[in-house]
Image 1 (cartoon, rainbow, N blue to C red):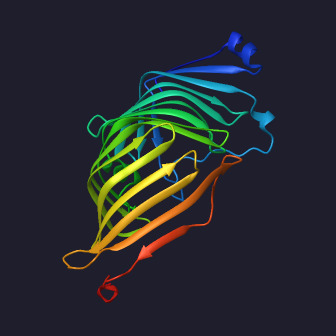
Image 2: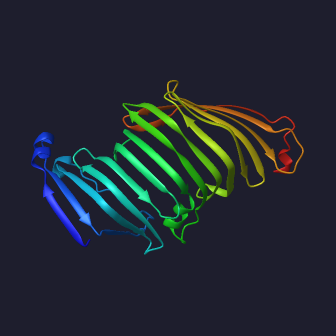
Image 3: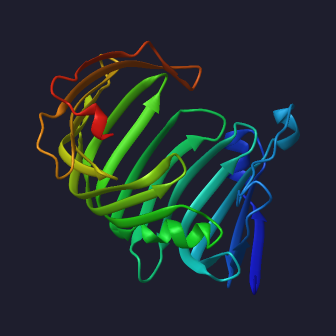
Amino acid sequence: ISNLTVKFAPLASLFNWQPVAIFNPKGTKIVLSKNDTGSFWVMPKSDNPKKNNIQLKFKLKEPTQIVFNDGEKILFAKGNIGLNLAKKKIYGSINLDSKNQGSLYLSGYGYWDGLEFKTKARINKLKLGIVQDILGNDSNIITKGDINGDLRLAIKKGIISCKGDLMLENLTLRGGILSDTLSNNNSQIKCNNDKLNLTNSNWDYGYLSISNSLEVLFNEKEIESSAFIKIKDFDHKPLSLKIKLPISIVDRRFLFGDLDSDFNLESFPLAAL
């Protein structure tokens, strides 16, 4: 940090009944390296929230450099971020720009101890290769593709709402639970107030070709999905699969019900697997 101004906001402190400190850094560089568990950041734990009864506000008027893995990837951040340590709440807005791999704008609020938030995301020509760059060469995760779109998403008292859409192009994923490459040329996620849709989406996974549609029904609190699965370069009737999975959010935690599935293996060449 080449220059840092710190001041207390008396009116905001009086209004919130807790001290509010404002930080105005300039020429800031934040260097993040993975720890032994592969995490860049760990939130501190406190059994007594009154010990941290303070709000911190960061005004990033000038671009702040966020450096990953000793300079392998650099993001530039601008915005206004607030942390209410007593309530474990983060709020404000931030724009992350990679200069050559797209940008991500986020605004809203959320809590880091559970699922309750309201956010707006604007994604502009974001290349997923940036995730692979951030994770570094020692990771087995492969991410490629482009994302564009605007999305508003909120969870309040267990009720989900959203609006907007996202475009996915030339998506390629591998690593983690994916032992083979999962790819998709073009998909669209559409969301309105009561459901999220992923329709007519065609995927390749290893030697399998998958045509899939998915709906997340917020009012019915249920995920519905149907898929047709074929073996590439093999003439046969596809495997038909339909599933329903109840979902709910209780005490800021996702809960899943009993999975209901229906599948048809007629003429599907299991021996070819």
